[in-house]
Image (cartoon, rainbow, N blue to C red; front, side):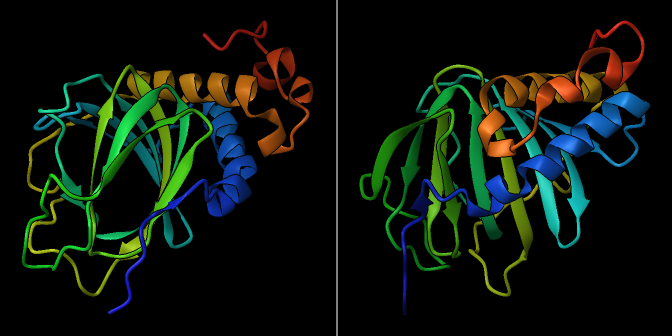
Length: 211
């Protein structure tokens, strides 16, 4: 059976979508309409995470803010779907398991780990690996994922049924503002946008403040 490790620095999908994602952020902030965005406070395991997400075609676009935690507390898990992750801010220690049969847990002493920081990205393209992230500071990421695979690990988990707290509109707005600021300040070239044409008064028409 073929098996490949996750691709590191593979931003083909997210980089291609950055202008659209950024435009969706601007649209929501300008209209103050967050009805297309769902949000969860994921705090039943670590790292504690704020997740804001919406759907575009067959993809789910997730904005994640991870809080710092210890390596021992960081939760190892497999994914249920193809995904690509782009680190917008901060850095985390990232562990990838070796090939793991779907009915088994990985050996935590095997695989490899590395440090990923802002501008790094990776994709997970099969159900036979687990990964684990330990934020070394607050970390912001964009994740794009597709529908679940036909086969998946017996140990895969989801947020369903966990009675997680949904984010309020003001929390959604705060997250979108943070992503707006980080993307506009640090990833202008990737977005291919002349930001001075969409910022300030022209964007909000109320004196130019995001807040």
